[in-house]
Amino acid sequence: MRTLLILCAFSLCVSHLCAQPYGEPDRGQPGDEMIQEYLAQEALRLDAQFAEDFASRENWEANRARYKEEYLYMLGLWPLPEKSPLKATITGMIERDGYVVENLHYQSKPGLYVTANVYRPATRQPGEKFPAVLYVCGHGGGGRDGVKTVYQSHPIWLAKHGFVCLIVDTLELGEIVADDMHHGTFDLERWWWHSRGYTSAGVECWNGVRGIDYLLSREDVDPENLGVTGISGGGAATFWIAAADERIKVAIPISGMADLESYVGNRVINGHCDCMFLYNTFQWPWTRIAALIAPRPMLFINSDNDRIFPMDANERITNRLERFYNLYGASDKFDTVVSVGGHAYREDIRRATFGFLQYHLQGKADPINDTELDLVDKDAKPPTYPIPPEQLRVFPTDADLPTDAINVTIDEHFVPIAQPELPKAGEYDVWRQKMLAELQRVTFRSLHQVEKPLSLVEPWTRRNPPNYVERSFALLGSTADTWRLHENRGFGISPDQQLTGGDGLTRAYGAIYQEHEKLIRGISLTNPPTTHMDPNAPQFLNILRVCDVPDMLGLLAPRPLKIVTRQPQAFERTSKIYEAAGAKSAFSLETLAE
Image 1: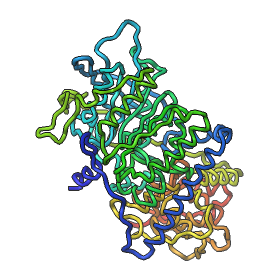
Image 2: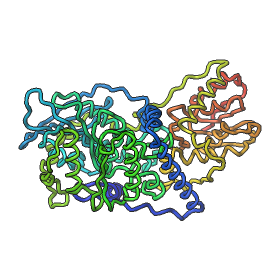
Image 3: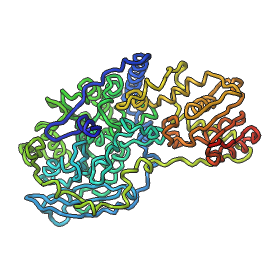
Image 4: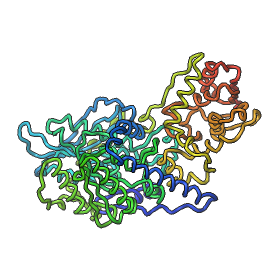
């Protein structure tokens, strides 16, 4: 039943796409209205900062390199992963009238398989190179055949008109079943994604970047003429990939972006899974992501009755991007289309998409009158496909599926956990200040921005699904647990006070940032989580990219710290940090009896 509900909320069929209305506000708990008003106002504040971006081209260019690094970091892609061998393998081929399809898989990281199809023209002159398009899919289903089969109409048209098109399955809806891998914080309670800095958006972006690497390895592809497009989840991925990789010359996102005012203030986030969002660590105005594509050609397509990409957000983003492209004198390279209808492809959207690609990648302005050929009709009984989906399988049978695939556990591998060096004797203060500075930069920025924190209690936040409050905090560069830590900064902890479990860990972290250290004479912590990968641990954005629980507790030195735990070996690092701080006697470790 849960799977059916998710598919109802998120499935994107080619002819009829579902959409959700604005999320209704929660009003069942004390404080609901207060916290939602705070989130809405914070979203407005961040979005308003985009005015600084289009204030002058010089200002933007001065910050551009930093923005690019921050952007990649927020996707979990900085430092950039190693570009390991793709091991691209063609497992089958289909010849049709005017085009050929190759069934292909490649590995964007070792063991992370991307299943795909390449559609290419049937004939090619010696040495001829074609412009290429990366088509990124939405949440269209497809089952064992992969979601790529649902969107086959688009690469068919492109191949018939002189393009090479690589269409890739998503992590969640590919042939290698990784069901729900876009829903970690939506309904799977994988809150450690926040601490790990992992989001499925980063995987989809990286799979696309490596798809570009594959396209450029082909002799039939013109490396100077690459485009990317897709709808909904594919529209978001179009932004992720084009902003990350400047080899993309043309971007056509379709129903793929709103703004913070919409996502948070109007609770539109409730209609989206996690692949639509990065963690806004550096508290960006959301439109800045799209601005990284400028001045390359972009066609921003939306629909006038799309409840998960509503018109008010479309108009705000369009206005901002038009002004931004004007900084480069490139207003002719940015265009918009608003189609009449809901969250779906229609003839005018297809015609505009193909025309924009032809114009900017082939230099043609020919009329397009054949977009309604070769369409998938999933509403027909039985559904009709130009190519039977099972023929597009990369792995024809279950026995062909790779045994070394890490697709279903990629969230545990994609973003590395930091292993900071321990401080040497006499160097503790320098080590501590360096750690605190990095934590302030990527984890606890909000601690230093407000004087009076919100008071948060658990029932206000985690309502599964869609966990509106906690997911909204991540879009604003924080977490609910960060605000609980903030709240604890103002309270003293007496030496005999017992702090327990995850809540106790939050209180202990609050002591690290306690400005009046005399209020903290010592801390006794019983059975704390040993890692922020523990579901019972408090979660803070990117903290595992800086350090883990033992190192955080070491930041309390030289104040007395007693830990009572069933896993004493997990806190050996804390002991060594205290020793380096010259406070070995201030740290004690006891084994908790079973």
